[in-house]
Length: 398
Ligand code: APR
Ligand code: PHB
Image 1 (cartoon, rainbow, N blue to C red):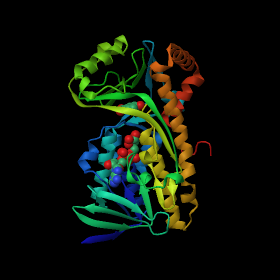
Image 2 (cartoon, rainbow, N blue to C red; image 1 turned 180 degrees about the horizontal axis):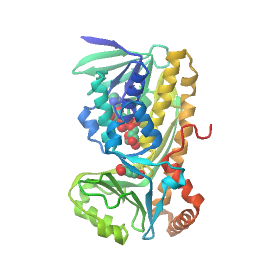
Image 3 (cartoon, rainbow, N blue to C red; image 1 turned 180 degrees about the vertical axis):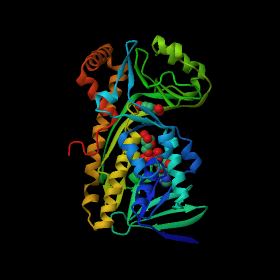
Image 4 (cartoon, rainbow, N blue to C red; image 1 turned 45 degrees about the vertical axis):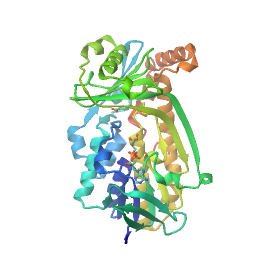
C-alpha cells in the first residue's frame, strides 16, 4: 500500500525554521506540509539559545504566534561583559537608538509554533522515516517517506530544506553543486539549566584566564549557564558541583555572592562551529536555517538567522504564487547569504574575542584584553558590539 499527497510546498524539518515557514506560508494562503523525523516531544526536548532580535520578534508577531512571548519573555535593553574581573555594561537601548532583545527560550517558541499549527489543523507528519527528496532540479519535485511502515509520497512545487545541520536536504545536493565553508573551534560549551533565579538581571559574557563563561536565563526562576571546556571533556566528568565551582571561579566577586546553585535539569556539551553552504537554492530546493549555516553561539545569532532566512523564503514564494514571478526565488540565496555572512562574521569575532585559545600562546590573550580595553572605552567600540548584538535591520546595506 502507498499514499500519495499533494501540497504547494514540502517543508522538511519541524524545528523553528520549518514551523515558522509553515506559519508564514499559511498566513499567505500557501499550502505546506511538514515532515519531521522525530516526535514532537523529542523536538521540544532540545535546549538551545534564547535571545531574539527585534526582527525575529516582529516576524513571530507577523506569523501570529507572539502572544505568549510578549507575556512571558524578558525584554533586555543591555548585557554585561566581564573582563579581568570587572563588569562593563553594553547599553543596547542607548547605543542603538532604542533597540532591545527578547529573552525567550527556543523551546517555548517552538512549542508556540507547534500549537498554532495544530490548532489550525495544518498537516505535519512527525516520526517520518527515510525522508528522501526527488527531482528538485526539474519542475515536479516530490518527497517520499515511510510512516508506520507505509510508503508515502508528496508531490509539490517546492521543497524547503529546514532539516538542520544533519538533515537530508543538503546531503541530497550533488557535491559539485555547492561549496561549504567551515571552521571548527578547539573547545566546546558545557551548558547547565537549573530552576534557580539568574545570577544577574542581564546576561553576563565573561572573558577569564580559565576560559569563557556565560550567565543566561529562561525566566526569573530558570537559569542557563555555560562554560568553555576542552573538546575532550566528557559530560560524565562534570558533576553539578564541579560545574558550579568552576562557574564561581570565572565570575566577579559580586556575582559569586549572588549565585544561587541547584540541581541541573539539563546538562550537555556542544561543539562550536562556523559553517556556511553556498548557494542555498538548487532548482526547486531551498535550504534555510541550520541546514545551510551554523554559527558559534556567542552572540546568539543561530535562531535569528533561521528566522530571517525563512522570512526571505516566504516572501519569495508569496511573490511566485501571487505574481508568477521568479525574481524573489532567484534572489533568495544571495539575499540570505549577505545577512548570513554578516552574522557569521560577528559570531566568529565575538567568539574569538571572548574565549581562551591555548594553542595560540600568551600573546593572543594580551591582544584580546587590549581589544576589549579599546572597545569598551570607545563609544564607537561599544556601538559596534551593540548594533550587531541587537541585529542589523532587514534592509541593512540595501
Ligand atoms: N527528515 C525529516 N526531518 C529531519 C531530517 C530528516 N532526514 N533530518 C533532520 N530533521 C529535523 C530534525 O529532527 C529537526 O527537528 O529537522 C529539524 C531541524 O531543526 P533544527 O536543527 O532546530 O534547525 P532549524 O529549524 O534550522 O533551527 C535553527 O536551531 O540549532 C539551532 O542555533 C540554531 O537556533 C537555531 C535553530
Ligand atoms: C542561552 O540563553 O542559551 C544563550 C544566550 C546567549 C547566547 C548563547 C546562548 O549568546
